[in-house]
Image (tube, rainbow over all chains, first blue to last red; front, side, top):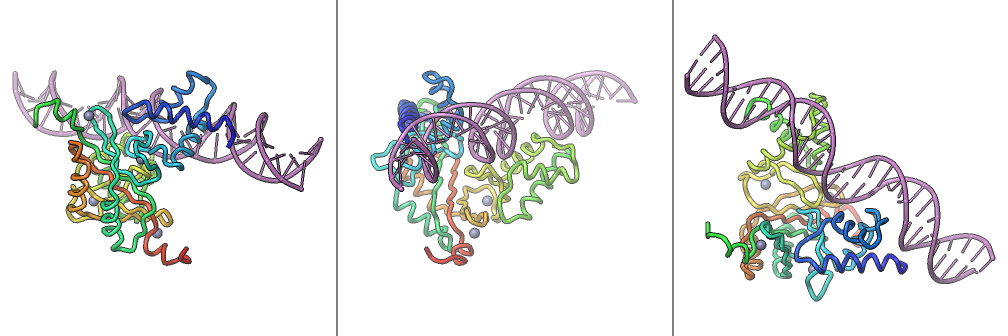
Length: 133
Length: 133
DNA sequence: TTGCAAGATGTTATGTTATAACATAATGGA
DNA sequence: TCCATTATGTTATAACATAACATCTTGCAA
Ligand SMILES: [Zn+2]
Ligand SMILES: [Zn+2]
Ligand SMILES: [Zn+2]
Ligand SMILES: [Zn+2]
């Protein structure tokens, strides 16, 4: 990996880190094009792939979008809470829950490798803002 | 909803039910076009939307694909185990796990509305077939 | 019976997300 | 230096999804 690739990764991570919510690959493409107009989609997807491998970025499968990892230790299975109202995403880590999950699905002999756990709902701030049901 | 819409839904559900693994919307489009060549994407997506509302079909967010619900009681939050080797998908229901999940993410005041839980890995059959690591 | 309102379905076009395929350039070792 | 290897750039297109509007049903009221 050479200088330029690292630069793209750093730029992508910087943009993602500056936001509370997720950005699509094409949102990122727009951002990076402000400083380098000739960037094409594969550049973004390559940077995202490298960042995801290093655990610095998570993909939100249910939104086709990406966020920076909010945790100290990257490289973990995360639980993502997505506020459908304001778009904010929060990350939780719960190894015991993953264990329980492994037990549930392991009954049939399934060996888990990658977890996608995304919960849509309403965050505390948005929930408080409006009349309770 | 009139006769024709119901027919499409029934056809889509029939095709999905006849498979072990997921199908994309365009796979389904191809299937239904065999009997009605003029069908367009919105027809498929409308049928899928109606089936999903009734809990008869689940969307695999991490695959952009769909499966028929395998459970007795539809309308439940499900845990989907996806074999990355053979493509088979199995559904589990675990209310106590969902409760635990609600506890974990509820600490910050988040109110869950929809769960996406998809676990990729290797199913028993595929795991047994090959040398252990 | 006829006319209309409401909603379902058909159709066209386009928006959005992602990757294949190949060209070019940088890097480092023989 | 020269070549092999890997990274990056570039073009094109594949795959997934929906907006927007036209048309057709259906049921009801006048
Ligand atoms: Zn993380
Ligand atoms: Zn919120
Ligand atoms: Zn189900
Ligand atoms: Zn398998």
